[in-house]
Amino acid sequence: MSRLVVVSNRVAPINEGQASAGGLAAGVLDALRQKGGVWFGWSGEIAASTSTTIKARQTNGAITLCTVDLSRRDYDEFYRGFANDTLWPVLHYQTSLSRFDWNEFAGYRRVNEIFARALLPEIEPDDLIWAHDYHMLCLAESLREAGCANRIGLFVHTPFPAPPVFMTIPAHAELIQAMCQYDLIGFQTETDREGFSDYVLRHCDGTRSLDDPTGQTLHAYSRMVRTGVYPIGVNVDEVRAQASAPTNQRNAVRLMGDLRHSQLILSVDRLDYSKGLKQRFHAFEQFLEDVPAARGGVAFLQIAPPSRGDIQTYREIRRELEAEAGRINGRFAEIDWMPLRYLNRSFPRSALMPLYALADVGLVTPLRDGMNLVAKEYVAAQNPEDPGVLVLSQFAGAACELDAALLINPYDTVGVAMTLDRGLSMRLEERQERHAAMMAVMRRNSLDAWRDRFTGDLAAARLGSPSAGIPTG
Ligand code: ADQ
Image (cartoon, rainbow, N blue to C red; front, side, top):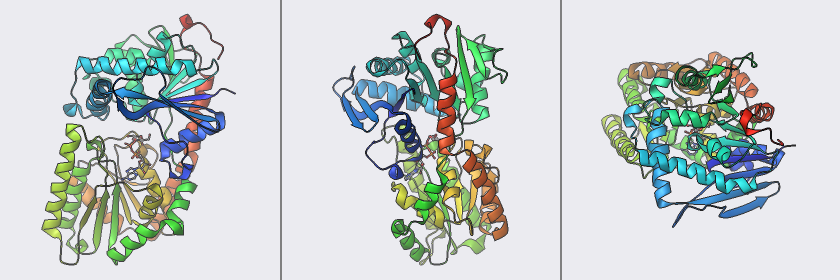
């Protein structure tokens, strides 16, 4: 059986129990445990120079974790610069927040090359290589240049926009050419897959392979690249078990005592402009304005730990939200009632899941999101006898599967406010029906199904380049 070699910007600790790992890390770790293999990525350390060979190695059972350090310059150009200040906003359709610099793009390519060269000695002829996310768009190209003939797949966790949006990145053609060096590229939704496929078919003389009746295998740059849709899921039983475990209830019990009989609206996000937090705060304010009866009886809890704090746009959104939270509370709070609680910190999953279970409404309103696992975790955490209501942005990948949620447009302040009112007053029977419909989809598209379908298709993918020669894989 082929081993799996996973490559991502950051790696997760392999010694922690699976239950404490985040959704994606748990899925990848499971796959590695089953097949055995290597997880390779950046250590998170900034060193005097970027390691050109593996800097640290840790083995636990069949899994080996291999990491390299980055120099300050590589961190600035690859991670902070091109990945997070150029690619991330464009992939989330926020072109006005994107900034481009050719030196940073060169740094991005350089780090992909260094990763490839450091990884190459670890790779055995039969290994399946599975790269993750927008940091690794050029990795397959660098591995091919270094002589790697294995099957290489990429899963894109973010959205992938339509060509006119992607083409705002001046290096768009170089990126697509590099992506065509993968044998399989997986996307969260059909819209994302089409964004990539349309670019290849319209802007670089690509064609659909006649051998693939689905039309999802493309021929471009003398290579074949298969594309597919693999919506990432959650382990629903594990989430529900964490949500209801008596040992995990400490924060939930404290919160319940404090809320007394108020209804709870809960949002949980990384602090990121793509998550639509500012628009969400305004929608909650609108709700308090439009539904005076809710004042004193509804509380909104926003949990959002800071992320990427050394990037200017992230510092700005943090300042803005602190000001907005203060203003809304100043406007509506009473001596004995605080409408909005904004916690700028992270919680372990074991503490977070019972909070999901407690909330009457899960409010998930990204402006764009590849999937959004919080939406799925919220549904999975509910008590099926008396479930809460998911209010979900139509622009989250999750909306393609969870159409039994109350779907909203996050830019429509009045619409979101009205939907909050509807969610908080929904009858038990309707809540149960909607919850059951969403659970059925989530059981089908579980985290295990995501992992097995992707690795199965990668193992079956035809090797892309006739000129690469057929390797032993
Ligand atoms: P993210 O943008 O990080 O991931 P998301 O899918 O919402 O977003 O969340 C990832 C995980 O982080 C969830 O398991 C959640 O529980 C956890 N998390 C979020 N906020 C937290 C908090 N305040 N405290 C503790 N834990 C928190 C990217 C893409 C998404 C895609 C995922 C997986 O941007 O669109 O769904 O990858 O593919």
